[in-house]
Length: 111
Length: 113
Image 1 (cartoon, each protein chain N blue to C red):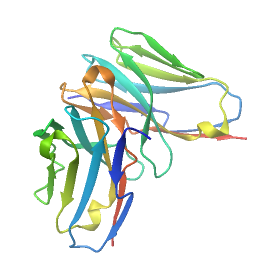
Image 2: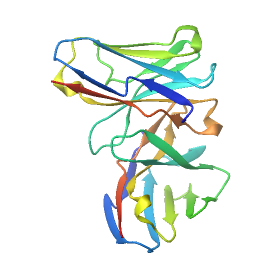
Image 3: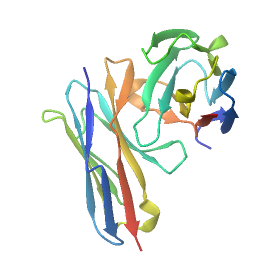
């Protein structure tokens, strides 16, 4: 059974800091992992999709890495801005049919 | 524009009433998913369709819930005899294939009073 955890549950940092969000999953037999952003009361916006054959993906100030063997992924945010404040969720496939989410990390970037 | 349209955006209903939500993905002939999210939690899987066929349903999908996807295009999720515990954000997502990742709609927020 695939289970996903995310650490930390919440994070508050001053503007400009670099930060790392962590995602762990129990079943390493995945074909990809996806990071999402969710603003309060809104739907999910896809940030990065990492295929199992890749080790990392980059988009602007975001970099996500994937280590299947250890069941871990990290999302690195460089030079954080107040506009980055949101909840960040990772999701991995389960049984090849649907996908399961972690509980999310709630990020606050203070000006 | 996320590529997935969900209506309505918000719904307030009295306990015991029936409600129906709609999801319109940008393209047909793909997988369409329904998820439910309560405050402070990650989304939880409800059900999914491959074209018009409903292939899997979660234990969360009680007998009061029914989902359809006629013709493999838009999908509807109906909740009968709503309960206060049904209050949540209902999210729709689609994918052309697992390799492409998933695209979510903006969700429908249901409040049962």
